[in-house]
Length: 291
Length: 283
Image (cartoon, rainbow over all chains, first blue to last red; front, side):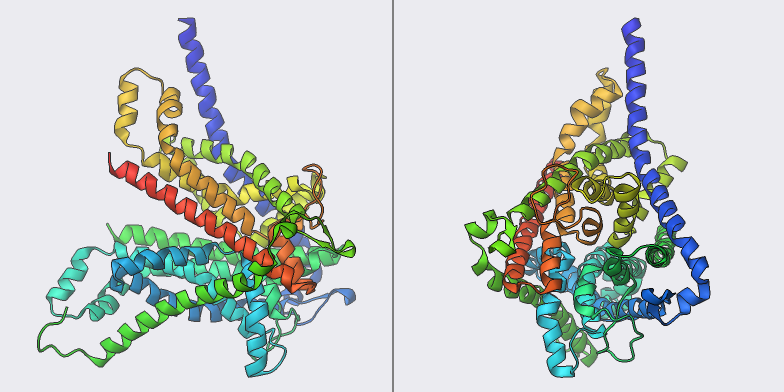
């Protein structure tokens, strides 16, 4: 009798340990959010919300902290990357899901996965060694530019877009495709007029994840962007993104400067949170639709 | 399939062409990057490069300290995150009931996965390095990276646990085993390939991570004598070489090594995940 009771206590104890482990994730999110906000928010108010977000001059030495050029760089870079990356990515996903012969897909898919695993510094290094000189040669300027950022980010978000879009296209019920073909549509018409619209919530999710990846990218961007905290007026202008701003100056910043960098982090964090919430809403809507 | 006499619209041809074109563009870009870097880097890699210490003033530009730092940080990160991750996954799959706790943990895991690495770096800097006084160290880096890879480990282990057939659980419980015994003696061993995949994917993530490591483990190019000392991982080394423009030959070589490591990791993860699928399908 005693051993049975002991066993029950032991079991309950282990279950509690498992529960605590599961809560580590919750704890981590909470602690990270709290810390970043606590360290960053006071600075935003000290500098002035409008001055900070809309200010066009970033000069820590003069205690002027306006991050609008950085916001512009991040937004424009991400937008450009999405335009290129989503186009190429969706076509590649279509290829893998519908068009490619099986033997070819067996090489293609691991290749795309390899693309996903390459560290961002390696992309940045390639961009620095190949892309930047190319841009400099054909479009003038030093080469470090918004255009370089856009191209590198497009390549980096490709695997995300391709794999999630491919999964979504494959998840469309076969009956949709068969029905369309039976009605006389060609394969291509079926893909673009039936399958893609049917897979749109998954594709949207892929795009949101791609945006998240592009906005959060730091190292690759630092190596190709030129890092000048000025508003870009042309694709060949040097830019600095929100992430690069933080990474570059964190090493030596102190006082209000350091707090301002945390504040930049807060802005980034809020951006990403909004994206995540959008993603969750879309996923929930998708689950509701397929019922 | 061609239907005799059916006219294919021009737009069909254009779209088909674009599909093939963009797909091959994707592969071409990958090939370009790999070939370019590896061709320039492979010539620099020899035993000396891999085993020398890094002291440019003395003419020594080996990456041995970086390799050690990278291995250190991988080891410590896995030691922290794997038990926590596996236990979390076990709880989520075997013990929890659908409800608030489950939803919150899922939401937390998804959120963690979405936070950009620079924010992790900021957090790691302010929390582990400064507040907890761990200073720039392998430990700070590993703690930060543990949180980063936690979602990967939890998700992949969950998949592995879910793929174990319910019949095993029911059979074991019917034979009188307790839930704990069922989980530890039967389900976990079955899930080992999946857990292995999770570990390998996490190693890949740790190796490739730069921003968060840079802000927490520092970039001292010496062999760290303890986990409380700072160290420079391979990716941080590449960043440093590229940014300062010190030596592009070394940079190509370091990049090549990183690519090889990632390729090996990808390959092993796919192989193990494949065997997992074959195992659960054959039952």
